[in-house]
Length: 184
Image (tube, rainbow, N blue to C red; front, side):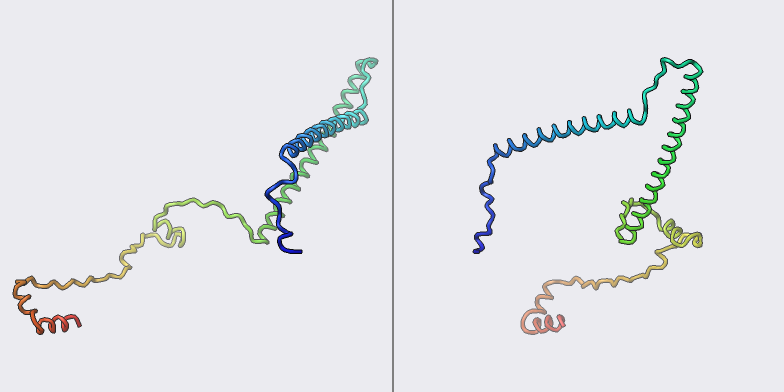
């Protein structure tokens, strides 16, 4: 096939904008109906499980003593469930800590540690030396004493003479020769 056969047609979409909008609205309506059905199924499942696990109490025909024993039994069951919930919560917390530690080890092994954002801190030279060298350096170090001194060469000042004499002396070939020799 020729290369022009592979060119994508981007100028005209296959579906018109109104058709696309119609399909989107249909899909959203269908998704909403499915979501409502899911909620209803979950609610029905929850009610069914609760009726299986927790039978209804028949308290109208019970005496006071029987009601008290029933309350004690319910409290014992509540305590047992709370203990189980507490144990499970501790196991989950322990597993979360272990997962966090293992993921940290994985990042360390990969070498992709996240660098913390550093703050700019002003530190004096004495404080920096104290931090680097510890408490060994008690007196402050004079950095200027260790610097080399550089003597500046004084620029040669030309004497100010009468310019007219200078012009007379530099005129002609002799003056040009003097300028040439002075430049070397």
